[in-house]
Image 1 (cartoon, helix red, strand yellow):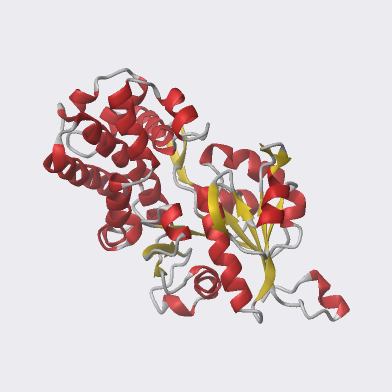
Image 2 (cartoon, rainbow, N blue to C red):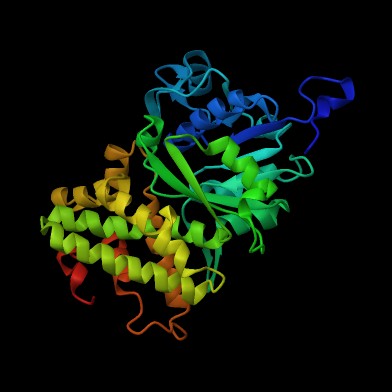
Length: 368
């Protein structure tokens, strides 16, 4: 157990895990609500206060952090949901992590690098992390999961939590499940590992069930790549092509995701995608609901581009599926001479072409 700085004074807080959440969007706020409740329910393991690093912005004439701390709601990203009186929004990243022993990363993936740069030298020894960020980092022909990025940049172990988790539904205590990927080579009892005990105690509830796998990369990849598939499903909805077409797109997309991960990340396992919530479960949920499907449908029906719809439907937030589709396209282009899958990954490429190359959505199925 990591010892709190206050242990030298014999404080009752000595030895308790202290949690900081890096990010305060809808998913960050929803998971803060769960963590806050579980921290209070486990006073011998966790300090009750959950610090949520919040990008300061104006909300109806007041700083957002002030609004969150006075109302215990995040009206900007998760309105009408009490996230807990023991959640404290903090605009200063250094202050947010100063005493933290457990870091939860849930920022938009395009901001992660700058966040990690700012965190350098500011976290304590022995800190553990978990990422809820969906997407991948691509540099030329190299691709890295965000769990690996966090682990290597901060020199700390990083797990991953991902699944069929629509933030609003989780915040409403509707039943859902998620997958926790743990960085271990152990083939024994995963439930006995310290990382599992930490994160399951912090996240699991009767309505938010967690299964554990020793496949961090698979959990990260499933959560990122499924957003491309949900865009394709949204195009189908916008075209009005019906349930049969949508089912075909979901099946095709799942096979591309499965084969892509096994081809380029050989440490991943089929069972992660076939049996866990971070795999096919997340695809189903995202293709039925979720913002990527919603925006893709609107693209077809309105003729507006992604930037316009981000402003009107997402309040200026970036569409993660489109960014991931671009990253995957760039990666496949860089690897074009070594792709082993027969026919390549035509659905992933079609989604990129529709989002960034003005391809007509009706051509989505042409090369499948």
